[in-house]
Image: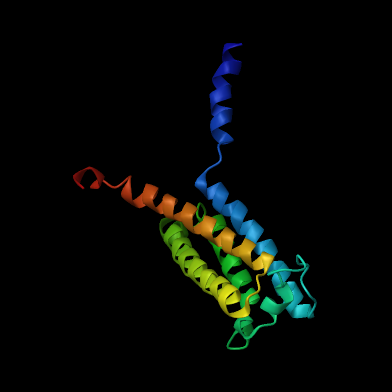
Length: 166
């Protein structure tokens, strides 16, 4: 019986959800949503969307703001999320990514969130339409950015030998 109680805390610590896990989950959600938008863009089909009111995914996806230099924004988003996913997977396997991957993810997510927010602003203020899929990817990028920012603070600020001097 004593050995059973000694393994319980060890098992509980292995099941703990960390900021890395939260980042990974929202990255996977974003891969699916931006992958779906990329699929609809590539095939020319209309995304499943809430009908009526301000929701009109077809209007947002078909606008002039949905492409940069002829490249659909959905493709760029999918590429960004795959890059973040790869960096997360390589953090514990490749030394360089282990040291700087978190900062790379923070930079990508910060830029991605700002760009998503710009596109959301344009869709609301210029197009007067909203795409639910786009909002979900924007929310995912926001969570990735916040979780990664917390990880960076924990790694580079709170564990710094100079942390007590501030």
